Length: 77
Image 1 (cartoon, rainbow, N blue to C red):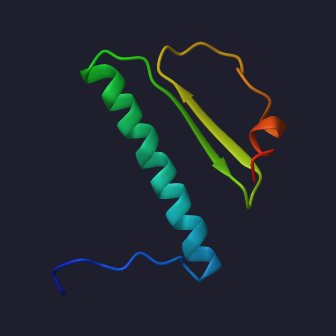
Image 2 (image 1 turned 120 degrees about the horizontal axis):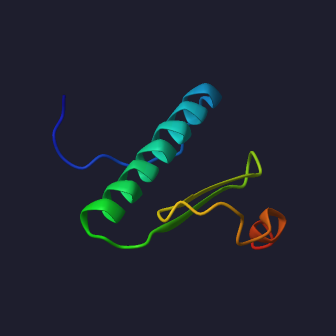
């Protein structure tokens, strides 16, 4: 294994791309949960996937309900 900087590239294989997105999304949510618990802060995380037209949200206070319209979130793409 080579140590040092690795060039960040887009994954070309579709299955690997889907797998990487899923893992990184899950890890971002875990980090947001950890931040809210350890630092006692309110966290609101929004992850937009423009390819699958999917919006993932996490809110640390646990209240239900959507604060925005998912279609409006994709207007900027």
